[in-house]
Length: 224
Image (tube, rainbow, N blue to C red; front, side, top):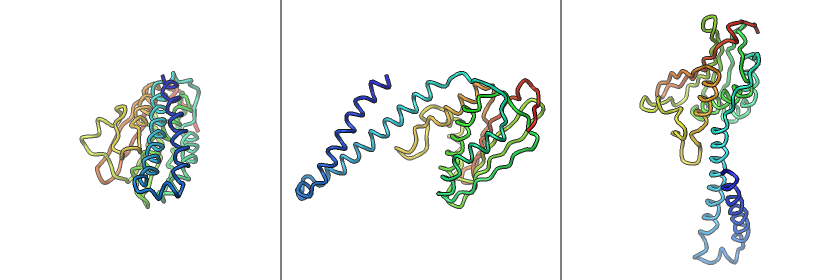
C-alpha cells in the first residue's frame, strides 16, 4: 500500500520541482497573473514531503515488531540516546543533563527499540521546551523488580484534558505540518511489548515528566 502511494507522490514531486525551476524565469514572473505560481508550487512540494513523512510514520507504527531481547544496560542506553540528540538541544539552547543511578539493575530488553522510544521522548521534550530551558534524563530502581527511565522538562506542559489522549495514534497539539501524532503511540507500543508502562506527570506551564517503567530481566540484578 505504501509503495502504491509513494510512487505517484514521487512523480508529483518531480514535476513540481521541474515547474519551480521554470517558474524562476524572470519573463514569467513579470506576468501579473503568474506571480503566485512559485509560492503555490513550493506549497505543493512541502505538502508532498509531509505526506511522505506521514506514510513513513504509519509504516513504522504498523511494524512495531516483537522485541529481540538481551541483557541491556539502561544507563548506557540513556547516554547513547542523549548523545544523539545533544546537538539539537544545543542549537535550541536547551540544557540536557543526565542523572543516572549507580548500580542500576540491568534489564532484558531490545535496546534498539528502547533507544527509539527514549529518543521520541527527548524530541517531544525538546519541542515543548523554550530556549534557556532544561531537559533531564534520570534512571533509578523501583523495588527489586522494576527500573524507571524518566525524561523531564520544564516546558509548556500538557493540559489536563489532553493527558489521556497523548498516546492515541495521530493525536498532536503541534501546528499542522510539525508532527504526525505517532511518536508517543509508537513509544507506548514499544514499552508495552516489554511488559512495561509509561507514567505521565505534567502541569500546564511548568513541564512534564514521562517515565518508562520496565521490569528487570527475570528479577536478576546484573549491575552497572
